[in-house]
Image (spheres, rainbow, N blue to C red):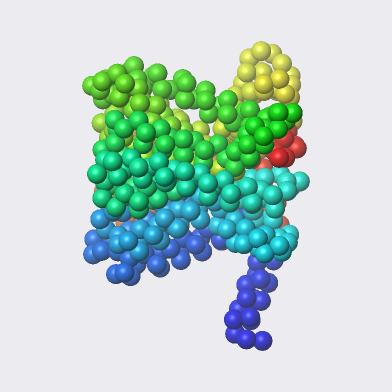
Length: 449
């Protein structure tokens, strides 16, 4: 047996002793560390990026967060930017999805261990056909990012952006993976009045945030008139739309910074900021630190809710929040059973939603406490940064670059746990034989395509 075969055999033996959540945890950690190693040489970064900055960037990219302590466009070479984009793509699709796609393309079956990890990554039920799902993830990702690149290239070129094609590819992948990384130091503030760029980035962010299950469900429903959207898709789409419809007028009417803009640009900006917080995309077209206190609180709440299961975004997830809302609504109406949109929700799904929310808020509280200790004070900027990091959003009020070494490590931990998922991280630490972490709120079988 060769040395390489012996190492592979040893790794396989260790992997078989780990649960699915533990494999998810170790897998994301391994790729983040690999990205860190690739970003450290002079080939990838400039003099201003320290070893800790590179670790921060690697974890931020793998977690599809978008927070950065240095400039991506100025402090990293083209190779470094490519590494960051590759980490974003891996983090958005799930680190095992690409390799599984290659296996399926070669007409080979996926092993039980690999299927378990994929279901844990995307929070899928045990009966889900994971082979079909991997194909759908790869196909949807390719075409959506290509279409986004095409539109953004035309707009960036017309606007006189240097290297328009590279900017288009980078921002399209970053938007669909809800990463929020930009090659511009001020994100997309230079294009605040450009409807095409705003709408394209917004659509890419929402398509990534609603999740691959919903994308496949909508696609097959459009192709087959006899097929209707599943209950899962209806809940996700209704919750996402509800947040957008309620929050956009609030920003439009009451934020003082937006009030200085012309009406059309004001509406476009308000809608974009709601989208970027809800989908956890992380781009911004106005300085977040310049927005009003009420707006900051609203954006913070939206970031906590976050995106949807099986997608590229973070947060508590719309399905968990919808389930908890159903509990409150049913209690206020004096009903013993809990229902949502005319469907009764089983007790185990309610327990999963409560566990998800509790784990998330507990992790957030611990992170805020640790960051306050590290920085010697608790400010609204630090609180906002913690919510953004754990929700893998990437919006910032400007506090990230000013963090000390310990503070950066705290935010790194929050971003990593946010991508793995607090519930999955808890299962990885506490379970020896892991199952797929249950993601919220929906009756069994409703996630089947």
